[in-house]
Image (cartoon, rainbow, N blue to C red):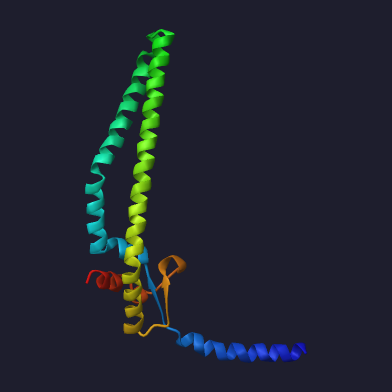
Length: 165
């Protein structure tokens, strides 16, 4: 029985080698292509405009906290305990405000980026499918899954070109 299994395995391997040799594979860096696209650049500019005010508030809160901390470190030893405690409380409040504003901004920006990615997905999928057909490929792998690829099999520039149409 084991001899039969070995023969079957050898025959299957012999048949699989030619099939593997004929498989045409391309590689794309989806993230690079998508975030280098004209749509992504436009989205990024819009995002910066939309959140400029929120970013300014975060920077202002950070700067105010920094100034309070510097004052506390510089003058804290000369203050009486109640003044020092009051200043330390103000500092803690400013830090809390900064953290709240930053977390809210980060969450909102992340949500908008996710919406952009979800909206771009059908276009990316169609462009990848076109690449497969145009280059007569059997498989396209993401660059993250590949250790090395010949430059002519890296289809990222072609994908970017399709996304920018």
